Each structure stands twice: as C-alpha cells, then as structure tokens.
Length: 138
Image 1 (cartoon, helix red, strand yellow):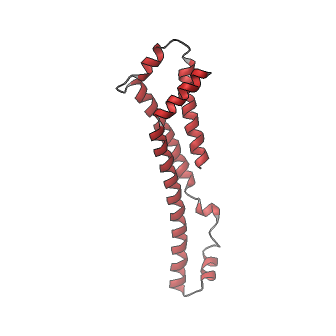
Image 2 (cartoon, rainbow, N blue to C red):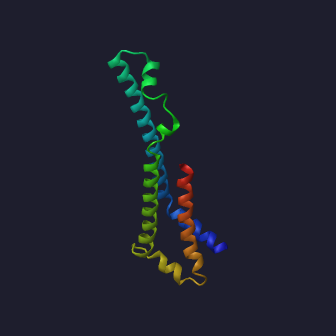
Image 3 (tube, one colour):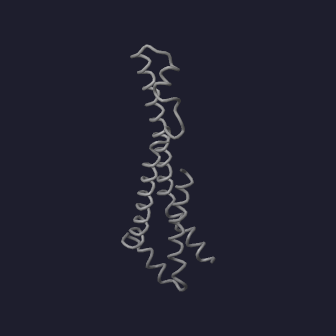
C-alpha cells in the first residue's frame, strides 16, 4: 500500500505540467464557449432591435425568451469530447514517456523487487485522478 501511494505520488509529480496544461485548456475552452454564446445571443437581440425598431423586451420575446442556462452551455458536449481526447492524449503520453522515452524509467521500476501490481496500479490511479479532476472541472 505504501509503495503504491509513493508510486502514485511520483507519477502525479512527473505529470504535473501536463495536468495543469490540460485543466487550464479545459477551463479556457469552457469560458470561451460561454462568452461566445452570451455574445451571440446579445448580438442577435441587438440586430433584431436595430432592424425592426422594437424595444429590447419585444426583441427578447421574438428570440424565444431570455437566455437560459441550457442555451448558454450548449457547447459543453463538445468540450466533454475534447476532455476525453485530452485523457487519451494523457494516457498515450504516460505510455510513451515510460516505454519509448529517453529515460526508460519503467525498466528501472520493473527491476525493483516487489509487486508489479503497485506499478501498474499507480499508473491507473494517476489516470483515474486525471479523469475525476477533468470531470470535476466540468
């Protein structure tokens, strides 16, 4: 158990830069999509007001009502697919870094005495922690 925790901690420390990049990219994409939806709705209302010379309340009524949460978060499905792609990228990056990278870190781990379950379990735990953190951001 202690070895598994140490290996998981080491794996997360080795992946901190990529994790921060993934999470910040996801946050930026969510904020950008929300701002785009709000700006698009506002420009539609203003265009309707300008063309038809009506009040703001009438333009909102013609647009189908006020902007709802469901409309504002319309692109979140695409962002979830983007996050899933990021997780696949992260899993590939872990595999490439350990097996094909310059350091051959995995060979040193596998030569250590003890259970290999802890090594593979720590990598799986790191991946699951990334998944839960990206879901938590959503």
